[in-house]
Every structure is written in C-alpha cells, then in structure tokens.
Image 1 (spheres, one colour):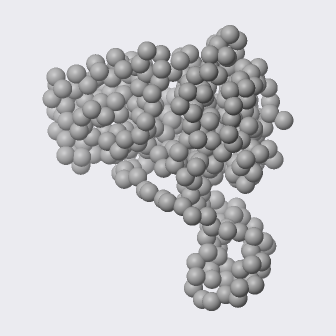
Image 2 (cartoon, one colour):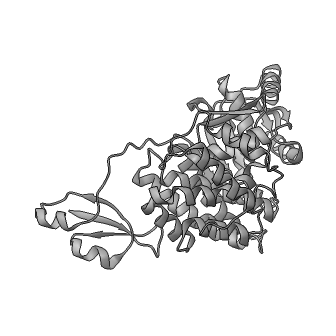
Image 3 (tube, one colour):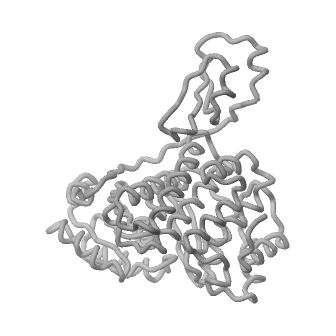
Length: 403
C-alpha cells in the first residue's frame, strides 16, 4: 500500500509516497489517500487512524486562461466558443473596462450593457436579455465581479448564449453553476449547468484597480466559499485539498495587498486563491453561512462581500463542534489556533467592517432576518433552530470576537 501525504511546507505542490505507515506521523500533513500496490498485514491497517469516506467528485468543464495580459486573448476565446457577436456586460462603474474589451473585440462586439447591479434584480436581467436579443448577440462577455457574472448567468439561464467571464474581483462565481435572482425583495438561488461560463480569463493586471478595501472584502468572500466547502454535505478529498490551499493562498495575498495593491505577484496570489475557492464553490454544496448572507443581502440590501466577512467567523464558531477536523484545516491554512477567531482577526487586520451594525442593518431587522433564514433552510453540519440563528445574528450585529 502506498500512502500519499501532502507536505505542509509545500501546499498542494509537494506530496510524499510512503510505503511504511509507521513513517506517516513523522512526515506530518493530512493523509490524502491510500492506494493498494501490494498486500499489507491487517494489523498494520488497523493501526492507522485514517479512513477514507465514500464520495462522488464531478469536475466542472470550464476553460481557464490564467496569466498577465491574458485579456489579449479575448477575441480568440470568442471564436473558440463559436460566437460572432458578443454582448459585453459590466457595472456602470466599470463601463470603461467594458469599452476596452469591446475595442479589442472589434467587429465581434455587438454592444455594451453596463447596468449590472448587486444581487441581480430580475428587472435588470430581463433588460439585458432583451438587449442581447435585439442586437443578435450570440455570446456574453462579463467583465467585473459577481454582480456582472451573475447578470450573464441570468441571460444564459433563458437562452443558449455561452458566457466568457473576466473576473476583476475574487468573488468566484465564474467557476460555478450557481445563479441568483432577486425579485420582490427575495433572493432566489439555484444551480443550472447552462450558466457555467465556458471560458474564464484570469488576468492579475485587471485587479490592480480594485481598491485595497474592496480587495479585502472580495477575498473574504472567496475564503467563505472554501470554508463551507470543507464541511459541505458532499465534500470530497480533492475539493478539500483545493479549499485549504485556496484559503492559504488568499489569506497570504490579502495580508500583503493592503500595503502593496499594485504588486502583480501579490495580485496573482489572490487571483490564484480566488480561482481555487471558486472551484470549491462550484463543486460542492453550501451551508448556513451562505444562507444567512443570501438572506441579509437579498432582503436588506447589505453589501455582498462585506456581509460574508462579518458573518463568516460567527457561522464557523457555530459549526465548529460538528466539524472539528475541518476547523483544524481552516486554522492551519490561516496560521491560527482557532478557525473562527482566525477568520475574525484576519478581517480585522484587513480593516473590514466587524459588525452588521457597521453595514447598516438595524437592530429591529434581526428578528425578520432570523425568520427569513429559516425559510427553505440549507443543509448544515450542525442542525439549527430559529433561536440559535437569532443568537448568531446578534453576535454578528454586535461584532463580537468568537471565543
């Protein structure tokens, strides 16, 4: 039997093959798998404290181009998906970036829709879809963060238009089949393979214009995806590896991006972490933390990324008793003894808001938020009641550091 052990000093890049189980503890690092290559005495297997659980792993089929000046490939990538007329999407603030993309596309640019907004209101989605039809667009190119990618997904949900995503934040939506639409103040989310971008272009140079504060918030959003991927109902060893490495890379990059926002190496670390965290989000389920953030964002219009940063340590503290091994992996990735406290301290060091009060939520909203969070509840490693949700939200509202 050959044991595969990931070396902590070389995350994801270094592995050791060990034929003698007695050597495992000396090497350290999580045991990734055991592959039968020769017979092993039964008593040796019994001495191992590690067990592989059953799992199913499905890889998402996306083409990823990662590198400095990767945007130069945009026209070629439009051709690759079999399109001739691309509708370029962005927020109003990022219209200049959308115009640059359209300029690179030349005659292949059908037009620009620069009205993407947070939480994808259904009215905005319908307007973009109608414009795509009017212009005869056969492809959507989304440049920006989760709001713009979400708008492209809303178009793809009701059409056959392929999506090319060009992330300028660390949201991770570009690597998932998850979509969200907000109607009458309620955000509805779901999964559909039609909304998965066919191509994703990661260009670190495009993220240098993202202010350090927004970078930090967006990065914490990405970390939230990886954290919940570790204790997801359908977690598996491959995704758990990517999740831990994603948390490590993102935390490393975020600690440096505040002081060196134009450093392309730092930006590459963050974007690499975002890619990994996005794969996690797109491959396994989500839990209580995301339910709370969807509720607070869709119903109270709180800023998406900052809400993740505030709620995450409290959701992790709540789930810690039910997922001790996963908490150890989170703590190791952050270099902290406590996963929940480590997340809280990272967000504080990055200068992010610490409480829901700081984000504009009113104390009177906590009861309604608790009620809404209990509607269509997500699976969670630790079952929860309405009273427990109310207590968790109170801690998040006050900005208490998890003990």
